[in-house]
Length: 316
Ligand code: BDR
Ligand code: CA
Image (tube, rainbow, N blue to C red):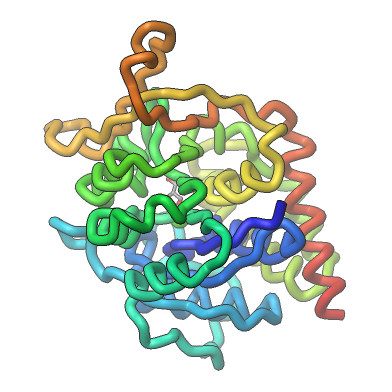
């Protein structure tokens, strides 16, 4: 099955890698467009980075800019992870490609409406664009196959002890998405952590072609943050939300009720995952498919290695 997909993102090193994996697997994923949102970096930076990624991969796909801040707060960028540009490391040229000039919400609405097949959304950043879209145009939900979200956590957190960065940035928008009734797959940080790329694996990217070298530079920069955390590998969170569409058989998942905490003094942005199951999940009409584990880490990371090679050879 070939899915029509739209990627909503805030690149971001791991967003960049996720986009690369999606573009390389065009026999399974037809990327109709990319929409950008403020998160890891400002909206302007995220948009330029998305255009740069496409240019490096030799693809011309529409990029539309969305919201420059979360619904209630100002964006708190993650320069401590991704650098001031949001994608520090590689040489950042001025992209020749330009954004569509259409707001992300209008692009998403029109593209979903005009698609003959249902569309899959892949949000990799704060859920501001997707929350507003579903709240404003709930009639689109029947044309959305699934929303494959990188965000949230089952037990812990990263930006807070109990909250993950993407959901924490805009909990109100996340609540709109999780309460909309749309079909959701959630890739929480716990599952993403199981798919780390060891440093000696990413060091080999330097031997490849143009896209591999770009990935090498991304990994070199982003790896510093992972090393500071004492991790033996680089965690490419956002890639998980793409690979679970390509290879659902590589994952274990469970249906859970997921509610978004918007009030808690120390838990704002928490995804409260009800994993009690049994009689309790029976009361939940729209459980979220939560990825609980990566079954086969080697096969999972091989998707990235194959994707880099595929795009390298398209460009050579
Ligand atoms: C998420 O936050 C961002 O820093 C990453 O791009 C990823 O989407 C991980 O918590
Ligand atoms: Ca991201």
